[in-house]
Image 1 (tube, helix red, strand yellow):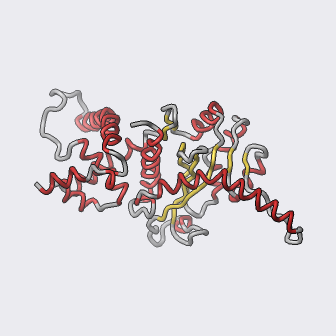
Image 2 (cartoon, helix red, strand yellow; image 1 turned 90 degrees about the vertical axis):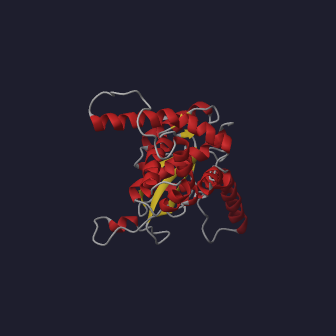
Image 3 (cartoon, one colour; image 1 turned 45 degrees about the vertical axis):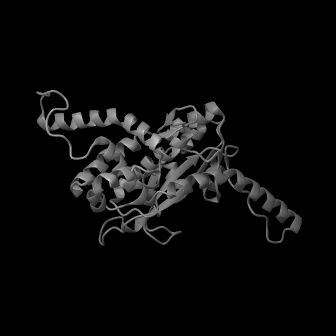
Amino acid sequence: MWTIGARAAFAHYAFTGISRHHLRQLVDELRPAFAAAREGRLYARRRHERRRRAGAGRLPALSFADRVVATLVYLRLAIPHEALAVVFGVDRTTITRAIGQIRPLLAARGCATPDGVRLHTLADVFAYAANAGVTLRLDATEVRVRRPRAGRVGRKAFISGKLKQNTIKGSVVSDADGFTVWCGGFRPGRMHDATAIRTEGIDALLDCWPQVQVLVDAAYRGLANDHPGQVHPPPLPPPKTAPEPVRQCWRQKRKAQSSQRIPVEHAIAEMKWWRQLQRFTGRRELLPETFTAIASLVSDRLITW
């Protein structure tokens, strides 16, 4: 009886990070994709057409709604799989398998926009910004990850020069209201912010959409030099010998640019509320999927659930 009450309590906003109404909508949205993926796995295993009706056979130990709730609680609070297994009354491997099935479905949703369209790629974001007249905000963030074992090739690539820790860097794009419209460009923490976003083809997108404006910080000054008039970094500081009125004017311009760019910082902070993005202790190759899944959930606040 205690387990049933605990499972119901885990559907609360304090554990999942979303309202119960949002949770119901999310379950209905993901159910067809989950059923299709499950049928594909079964077909690949048996290598022949189904011989009995859908739904026949042994009932699953964990319902689909419980799988979604367990995944959200894991992403939100980073509760160990073994602890979730105790609450849901199943084996630990069942929780691990459930999270591995639901997390890709969340990551594939993309980021929501006010008109209901979901953006999946950086090209989608530039097309949306060009059509809606949105000025984009771009910044990068780093998530601490487990250190690669000794002797592994490329071990030093994860050491961040800024944080002095092993990290993976991701790029985030938001609009003027602080809503996340894209996250990607995941690279080892040693890579520079501008280099990470260049690997996603932003130079070609800026050339293709010359009307799109992007606000960035000082780390992207090289990108701004290649695309003047489109990419706007903070103003360069005047010489130390400059008179005080000149320096005061520079400080005012820098503050104005920072005030316009700050929504992307708020978007990153909103995603960092989820414990998995504060310090990721899982396999490093799963961080991009986890980051994208959380971004899709956070962007849902644009939609009236």
